[in-house]
Length: 249
Image 1 (tube, rainbow, N blue to C red):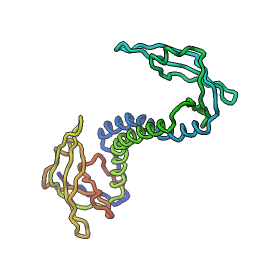
Image 2: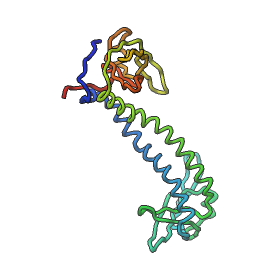
Image 3: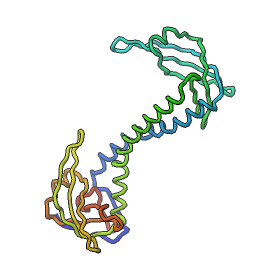
């Protein structure tokens, strides 16, 4: 491996051809999950608002559809409507158990509270246990967003940070110490270990996740160009092994 000399910062950074396909596939896949997580977080205060400050309304059941599962069980999908501020609002797909559906008929009514927020109707049953509802929804949203957030960081945060580092970071000489391969779930993580010395004489030993090809092409003792942040030298990147390249533009 031959060490590269980079132009002074700020540099023009580009992604290497072919290295962004998996990243963008992952970004497109995770985006709706991220939006769903944000929606759950926003729904908690909105549901509390509707329950405590919404307008009391009478909902009327106008459709009741029985559905049978593959395991032989039965359930009902109920549709209903209500009037709020002179407008009729229809809602569907509220599920009922087989016992609830058997004791429900079209034309039945039930009490609820409703409000329009940002031109969107919100409806909650009057007998809802709002405390348990908020706690459960909030807990689900927290777990969901923690899981999705980890993927968002890997797919959006890490590449953005690496691009910024290549554009503005300091350059120095480094040496490859070794490489590791670890299985994680259904995937495999490839990591290169390296060291470099800062202008102040501080020896830094760290590592960076790289592609399979970059990992296999590196060997202990190979020289490498390291780009790092002076305020936090461990935040660094082995230039020749990353997914980006710098031009002299």
